[in-house]
Image (tube, rainbow, N blue to C red; front, side, top):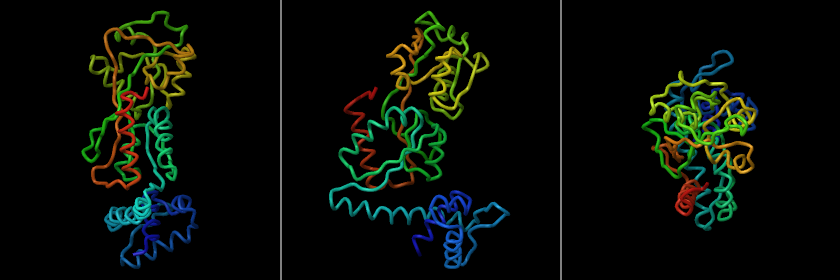
Length: 301
């Protein structure tokens, strides 16, 4: 069975589109169609139903998908195995990361890994925690690093460092430097979107204290940490953010931390993998590197 046919099939299956597969693989649409047609003839079955401009995978395609993933991964791993004989880790690592670890942790970790293994190329896909976990579930990513857990049995969560969530305000908005959680919710708040790990952990902390979102004066919901920081700077409200993400703003006095006297807000970052997937050599080495970095520096903050 031709490995190129399988790789084209996987792209069409994941994208649910011949045109998107064409863009992803840098091949013409007729070439994509020829690959799929050859595979259908070889397997003597139809893999996709054409429904106008959209396509739907058949039952046969769904069965083929997991086998094709395994075959193509083994083929891709041959280069890694040969690299091991030369005592060199090579290849491309695609790592998914939620906003905080992806922006504030990954650059330093990747830099130290590249010093050991310069032949490895990195691609970091940043999305919210929920989206990263979904991509690992759908086999679109092998490793993700997130700031919150979703209770899925197919996902393995490996805690690797602790983060602190803190309350931040514009310096002119709150004159006090300490308050209680119940006092805090009297002020307008700006929050991340629902899929965010920071939002999920904030909700969990509030719920544990018997505070519902109906009790909060939400003045805005934003899709990125940078947008939240700008909103807080402009006095739109206070927010609960990772201390990692506001380190520079606190240092230069652009934002002000409001200490909560009745609660300490901690959360963990997790490395997520699919329980049924075997990691290629380069990914295993990266995983070991991340864990060793954590042991050496108990907090990367």
